[in-house]
Image 1: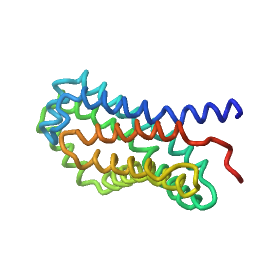
Image 2: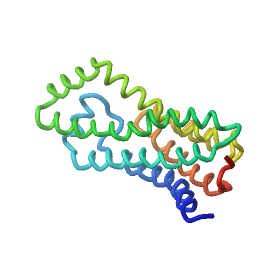
Image 3: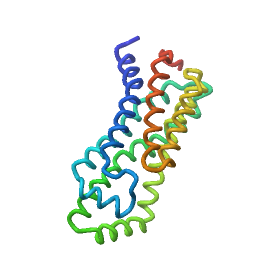
Length: 209
C-alpha cells in the first residue's frame, strides 16, 4: 500500500473517532445545551468562553466527518456507484456548508451581549423571514445528515463494508436531532466511535476502475 493511500486510510479511520470525541466535548462545554431561543442566546452571552469552545468543537467535529464520507465515495464502485454519486451531492450541499453555520453562535454572543435580548430577537425574527436563509440552512442541514449514511450504504452495496455502520450512523443522525437536551448528540458520538471500529476492520485496497 502506497504512503498516500496509507495516509488516506488512517485519516478516514480516525476522523470519526476524533469527531465523536469533539461532539462529547461540545456537549459538556455548552452552558445550557437543552435551552432554545432567547433563553439560549442569554446563556451564550453570559458564558462567552464556554460557548466559543463548544461551537469550535462542534465545527471541527462536523468538518472531520467530511474525510470518511469522501473516502467512502471514492471507494464505492460497481453496485454502489450511483449511491456514491448521490452521497457526493449531499456532501457538497451539506458537509461543505453546515460547519460554517456554527458561526451563528458567535453572533448570538455578540448581539445579545452588546445590544440586549430585544435586539437579538429582532435580528433572529428577521433572519427567519428571509427565504434564502431558510433555503441555505435546510439544504446544508439535510445534505449533512444524509451524506454519511448514504456513503456508507454505497460502500455496503460495493461490498467493501458491512451494512451495520450505515444503520448505526443513520440512527445516530436521527437521535442527534430528535432526542432532547442534547443527549442525542452523545448517541451520534457513540455511532461515530463504532464507525471507527468498522473502518479499521475494513479491507483497504485501491478500488477497481
